[in-house]
Image (tube, rainbow, N blue to C red; front, side, top):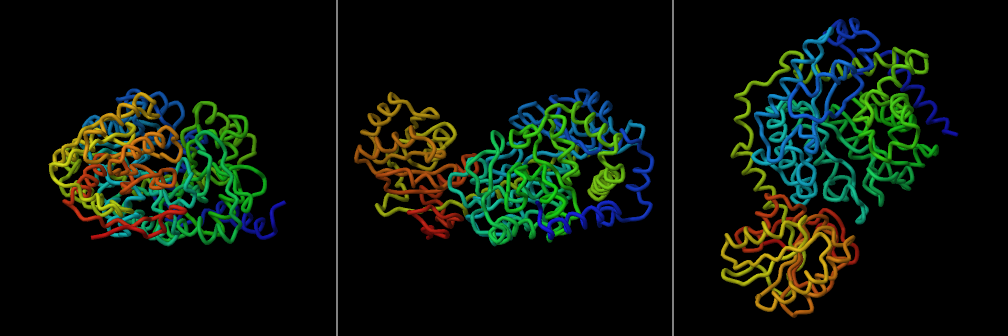
Length: 562
């Protein structure tokens, strides 16, 4: 049974929601209120849904928008909404076309158009747009100024594409080296650092007109299970949750975050029912609304993830809404989800005034973010895409992030003319790294391996190492890749000086032996690779500080600086 305190908090949040006293719901007979009054129940329920639709042009979205009255869409790469490489004009045309469809509805309401543009590992907008290093790279710089500037520049480019909501920043505190889903998407393991940089990004996004979304509540940083494929359990007690996991959300809320995204994780200390946070009333209504006082939108993580699907599919969106969510993101069957919520309202299981409270929040955000006044974006706005100042900022952040953790053998910097063998799996970008090093005077010979290097590939790399002055292995989560570990051991056995560059999580050294120099790059995007090449060749000094602990090897804050 929930504690008395929890029951009181839930009751308070229910009353809070029912009377609509949130800051996002105030404003008298403003546009949000008058629009809500004109909407049918079917139209109001549709506003609760943000969906993904495969398609390159607005006509592909028309049936879904009209049939289900949806309140928003989320863009992805895999369904061709945002092409790779970026075609900015096409994306802007898609956004404007979608808003024109919305404007033709019986009650014209613009759509929230969202995407995941975290920077680094997770980014739907690619080059020629500006691609920023991710959160852990920012953590390595320790700079809230960089975090705010990166968010602002990202928001400016998103807004030019017609995207008004970003599912960032990630404010999970990554305290689990084996975390399979967060890792370098987090600013680090220190709650104060994550709070400071997360709040800075909230301000950066929102001051440039894009809604920021702090995720994944109440904290996905200490898991060994990916909620895309399973149901993680967080075993922290309440005191630890307050000190570690919840602190960055408090900071994001204080900074004015428009939205908080839920996590599909079980947290027994907050709700002993075994339900994930997305479906938990004590967590969403009791903790987030009543205790933390959050007044913005509560957005579920994608409802097509395994961690959310612990109930029959028709019950998941209903229970998420009853738990306290406002926006139901990406249900796997939009029609089923829409009909299920609508039926729950008609039957009285969900009160219509509860729907009204969420829709009012959604409408208020659309109004506050300028979508009512100006839903369409002018073509000339595209001039900011890939702006030289934004690119210079991204390069500067990357330079400041590269962290040299060990160079006891004095291998670095690499001298001009040095013969270097560069190898590693495709995710670590060894080919691009070899090219960048060659451009800086190193005679780099690329020998890319497969994702799990075969014995034949390892043998070929060992043979080619014989003609090199040194060997550089670019790794990608080698702690979970035994074949990468074998590759490193075999190359260490050649006796050639061995450099390892961890291109994703910085923990790889804990699974490797015989390494002479170890560097963390926190990402394998081109911006990270170019910065790494500059540091390896001495064109830029190493200045990054480790934002996590590597157990048994390097403490938080480690880094050889010059």
